Every structure is written in structure tokens, then in C-alpha cells.
Length: 148
Image (cartoon, rainbow, N blue to C red; front, side, top):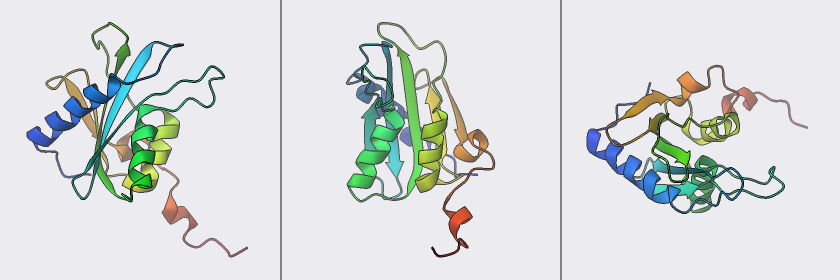
């Protein structure tokens, strides 16, 4: 289990996720998602979802933040905050990471990554990636892989 996020850090991540959500490109679903990913060195990387008319190239907010972070040298993460709602609506439900995002985050955050799914700064669910993705496949599964 991850160390609990202090309230100030959690609130900052939620605010950053809401700010990132403003940039979402969602002409098809109109469902905007923002994410803020906290690296172990204290840097915060944000992302929004970016849709595409052919759908499969669409990228989720969590992976946008993750790929930005990795492309800038960050490799370990301690927490992510995620917010989502339809354009012009108030969050009624929390938005959790999809299965693909859970797997991508597991590569760099492992089971202890804190996941904050928020409707607001004061209304959220906090869990761990391990709880969202039990029995995950990760780098440790390949440690004894035979050489090809």
C-alpha cells in the first residue's frame, strides 16, 4: 500500500487534473478527462484525453500524462489524480483509469501507486493501483525470461 497522500498534495493534484481537463479534445464523446501524475522527484505531469475520428488512436488523459513524463526522463511515480465529466456538466461519478491505462501506469508506478479519482477537491476516492489491477503483469514477470 502506498504512503497516504498529504491533504495539500492531494488537493494540488486534483486541481492540476481539473486544469488539464480544460484542454481535452473530445469532439466525439464530449467526455473530458484530466490527469495529474506525481513523479517521485516531486514533478507533476498533466494530461488530457485526445480523441480521433477513427477512435483507436484516441489517447486517455492518464497515458498522455505518463508519456509526457517518461519522455522528459521521469520513471517512477507515486500518485495520480483523475477527473472526468461530460462537457458542461458537474462530476456526478468518479472517473477511474481504463484497463489500458492501469497497465501502462503499472509499468512505472507498480501496485503502490496512489490513485485519486475525484469529483472535487473534497469529494474523491483514493485507492492504489494494486487494488484496481490485482494480479497485474509487470516487469517482474519478465525477470527470468529466457534470452531469445
